[in-house]
Length: 148
Image (cartoon, rainbow, N blue to C red; front, side):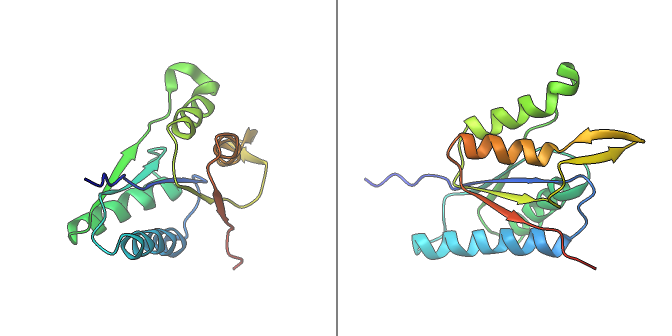
C-alpha cells in the first residue's frame, strides 16, 4: 500500500505585509501544483505559519479558511510567538517550525534587515525564519514587496 505524505508549506512574512494577492497567488499555486503532482486530491496541504494577527501570517490563515470552506484538503498549523522567552520567542518559534521540516518556505519579505518599531530598531523575524529554513534544508522562495 502506498502511503501519501502531507505537503507542508511554511509561510513567513512581515507584520505590515498587506499584499493579499501575492500571498493568495503563491498559495493557490502550491495547491494547484500538489493536485497536479498527485493526479488526485492530496492529503491535506498543511500551511505552517507564525500565527500573527496581521501581515502574511493572517492572510495565509484567511486563505486556509476560504479554501477549506470551498472543499479543498487544506489545514493550517499555527505556531504562536513564545512570549515567555521574551525577545528570543520569535527565533525559538522559527527554529521549531524549521526543524519540523517542510517542502517549501514562502517568505514575503521586503529585503530589509532591520525595521523601526515604536521608534526602536527591531530585527527581522522573517529573515530569521528564512535563515533557519535554509539551515534545515528547506527550499525558500522569497516574494519581494511590489513597488507602488
